Each structure stands twice: as structure tokens, then as C-alpha cells.
Image 1 (cartoon, rainbow, N blue to C red):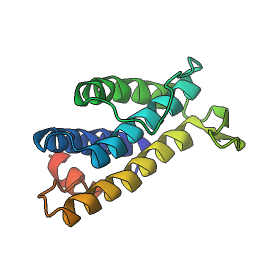
Image 2: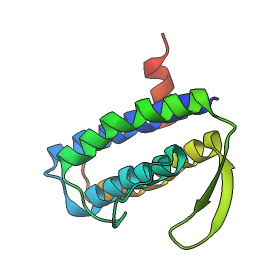
Image 3: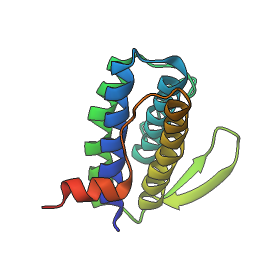
Length: 147
């Protein structure tokens, strides 16, 4: 499994949830979790590109349109960096002050697992609310995208 496939899956799954949550009226709790996924992804990509990302509170609620716009922008840039400098070591300082370094590919894989974690929280919310929700698992994505 390559990181590019994980990134494509992450973007697909986030879009499915953005669409479903919009259909439900953009309920605050799950929309805030999805917003956090997108803001965190923006922050990590800013660390990779060196552009930084003055995004403010990564736990804030974004409007649906802003989440959708960010989703459209993130994947192409992530794939570009993955193709050009996958093994470049990137130092970072996390929001809690922890420092470290990881390759571009490792950071992008982390972004994907972070998304899986929070999409599972959104799915738990939907199940508790008895709201039908999309299946966003990796095998489902691979089945749909392989031809």
C-alpha cells in the first residue's frame, strides 16, 4: 500500500462525510470533528511546504463551504510533495510543544490515520443518533476505484 493511495482514500472519505453532514444540516459536533481533520491536514501541509499555516484554533467549526474548498486544494499539493520529496526529513513542533522529525511520506501517512480516527468518531455519533452514514473504509474505496 502506498501513501498516495492513502491520501486519495482520505480525501474521498472526507468528501463523503462533508456531503453527508451538509445533507444533515451541518450538525455541530460531527462537523467540528471534520473541520478539525481539514484544519490539522492544512497545518501539517504548511509545515511540509514551509509556508506555515496560521490557521488559529484547529478545533473550531468551519462552514461547509470552507471545508469543501480546503478539501479541493489539499490533495493535489500533498500528492505533489509526496512525488517530489517523499524522503525529505521535516522537523516539526506539535501544538503541545513536542518536537521531532519525520519524512514527508510519514507525515502524510499520519494525516491519513488522523482522519480515520476522527471519521470513526463521526460514525459513532451518527450511529448513536440513528442517522444513516456512508461507509468510508479503505477496502470499500479500493473496490470502487479499481478497474
